[in-house]
Amino acid sequence: MKNRYKKRSHISELKFKKLLKSFCLDLNASQISELLTINRNTVNKYLTEIRVRIAEICEKQFSFKGVIEVDESYFGARRQKGKRGRGSYGKTIVFGIYKRNGFVYTEIIPDVSRRTIQAIIRGKVQQKSVIHSDKWKAYNGLVDLGYKKHYRLDHSRNEFVKGKSHINGIEGFWGFAKSRLAKFKGMNRKTFYLHLKECEFRFNFRNENIYKMLIKNLVIEPLN
Image (tube, rainbow, N blue to C red; front, side, top):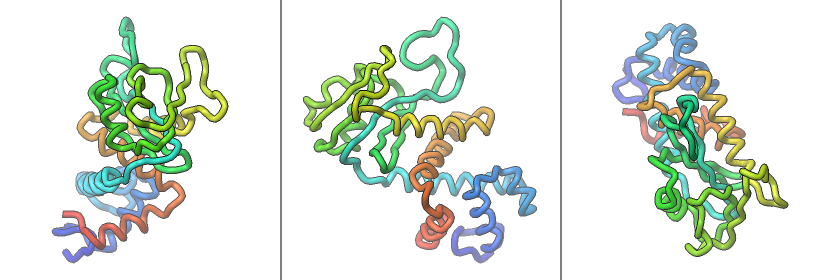
């Protein structure tokens, strides 16, 4: 069926555009299926492909420079009794970089070690940047790596703002992402990455028409 936005499509171009617009309006698969009279499995297939494309767009993001906030957050299972330390046993760890008044970037990480976190910072944040973080030990030594300045907050002492130093921007994104993902009432680890990148995309372009952005992208490179 001819469709400029999707190769080997089983639905018409018009119906695909309606599906994409419904997705951009944040309707879920059941709502889209009922609205457009498309099989639920077919809708899920298309939504997965759209999310893959969104993740690709996010991963192509340029490096960060300027005033930067960094932080980690934990998604998934509730904290288990008897488990102490950074985060919680069984949770998915996500590291985030946020340029003030700009974009956020997220990455799923295996641990919160200095080696893991600083490798991402060095790969994504330019050295002339000013970095704000909490006092987690993984952030030790960033100035020694060449970063201009590094300001730190001691959350253990209820220190959340000190002058211009804070990480409210990245924490605001964590709140947005967790609130949005909660509506799925549990999420498969295999699909978490795609939903996380969708949150990133929606947050970064919250003041843009994401439907027009995606249509323009898909005209240039249709879904397979």
